[in-house]
Image (tube, rainbow, N blue to C red; front, side, top):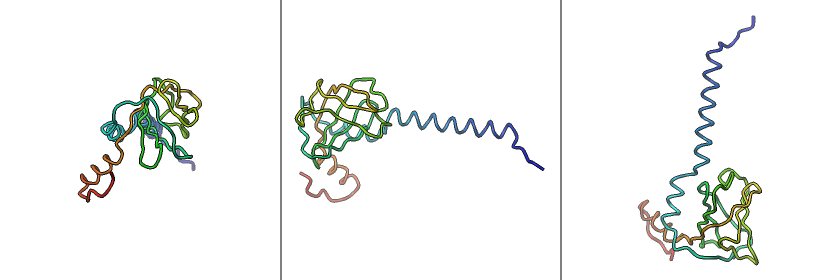
Length: 146
């Protein structure tokens, strides 16, 4: 004898899955608010350009129009791009154009899923200061971070 699942149970499961996927999509679209606030709090004055120092450029999206880029191990920049920048948070790879390793405001682009997004602002992040403050807040010793 075949046992069928009541239609009510199937509808409830489908509705739950739909709600879960919507909330996950919303979270991805807006980014991690804590990470966004963390880097923006330690962002310095705007600069017109910066130079990549390390051969393998690291970058990570933190908001729908912002990402952080490491120029070297302790030099981090907060980059804001023009909206809309499709799929910046969900893109598996993010590219940044440069000319002779220089990334410049308004002439360089962030590439998200192949879509070019013009760089609006570049701000150095006081990364060592941020790490030191987080260490102190966690109850650790300040250490030597510059």
